[in-house]
Length: 313
Image (cartoon, rainbow, N blue to C red; front, side, top):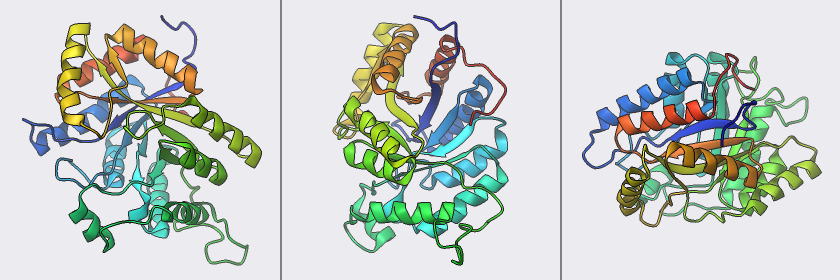
């Protein structure tokens, strides 16, 4: 299958900065910087950066990576997939991302989720408690949107939104894996990124349909992204071998969604985007070495004919 017309959805990449067995943290961090440069050159739509607090990751605050990568890239959008909102103060988060928007106009996206660290020691250190209240995500999202978009009375201190007030707020995305997060995103007028690779994901197209329907009822624009883990290799045998390897690491946390040769992965991405009605597909490439990961993003960029000089809206 190939495209001769404009791609009907945007193609993006997710980077976790995982320090895999046999790699050093400095090596993986350098790989992430190189990946951003290459995605920018290949004209991918967006690079998403995760937040994790366990010791086998290269960074904890994705906004730090966004700021650094914004200075070395030219056109690619940079987003967080996702800031762990239960750990954050909504006003401070709004101020941070408005500042990033001021520094890099039109290239910043704020993705948030209801997740919390799996490491109980880190969770206690960050929140003062061994557990976080899941119900707090809805209020945190409401407050964040209010500070970003000035959803206050005209005479309120934050009627113009969080400081800096001279720039518009960056787009907000809710990252989730089921109906509840989809509904919250629609209610708040945020985009919705549906994770297909987390084990808890429903893997139901009905989730994105519900989001579209709820957004229409609310009179807000809808934006759907789907996030899928991917093993793209030159041959089916190489893809199968890598899949067997990484599935031993993923355990109960994540699943492999797309795997095969570049042509096979291309077809799976197209079919999945159609099934879920996606405006964007975010690929999390499950390679622990840089060379095959770069080969995968280059092969798919060629098959999807990624072109154009403008920064997409």
